[in-house]
Image 1 (cartoon, rainbow, N blue to C red):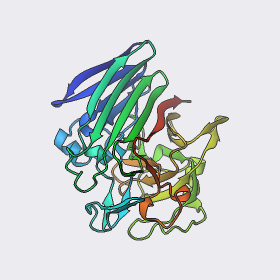
Image 2: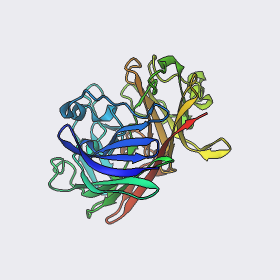
Image 3: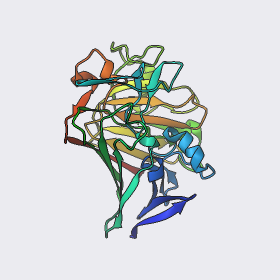
Image 4: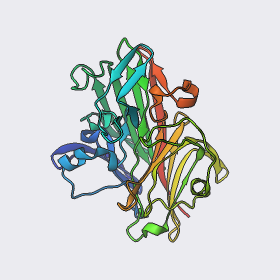
Length: 336
């Protein structure tokens, strides 16, 4: 098997191309350390939404809906307010219809490549972003941190982790997610209605008209249970912020916490595993007719800093000065 990590040009921007066995991936630091492209070449499995025709400017205009972006801060903040134990910050309103601030800023920044290397078993890319007074958002949110990303591609797929370190003297709220964008279908010959989605959901969080939690759990209905049976068709109908706790179930007699996308005809699967730090799921498909959907794992609930709930329930947490936290994910193909 060949393993390589190569710095190369992508439309005038530096990226890292990773190759490992049947897998190939492109890591795009210019787009917030996004896995811009990932494919199982032998099995014709395209893991994430990718459009070769888009310019750099077009990608930057919609960084949430291509590839595998990492968001900080995850999802919505009511009225743009970020309450912490030692401060209150007011983010700009980016969704005027809901009067909320959406998705933060980390995925919109140009990050730096710190390593591109390979061994006899994997190919690795590391990137980072230093958030401090040089960032234009620092006047709004003056709490410095460092984000470090590692992408390790092997015969077993992509192993991904991100570490956030508080480099300030203030408390740093921690709420991270991946706005994972997957095509339905994900193979060249697949059909949209042949796509199925399994997600390890638990209790459901209903949302109000502003897409903010009401904090009242409701019983799963027939729609929700389709995620658990793996019978959910994730395109061609509207999935507008289905929100649940994230659980761990047995798959193939092993613990599994994540999502599985499959095509009935081919038996091919995308498997996406997350660690126990991800406590919630948000499912969304942008109206259902655009050919993609987003199973989004997140460490905190929508609007967690402002919810009238303890952190154990909302997922809200803070990192003290010098503290850090790492989350881990694994993305790979499975052919039955």
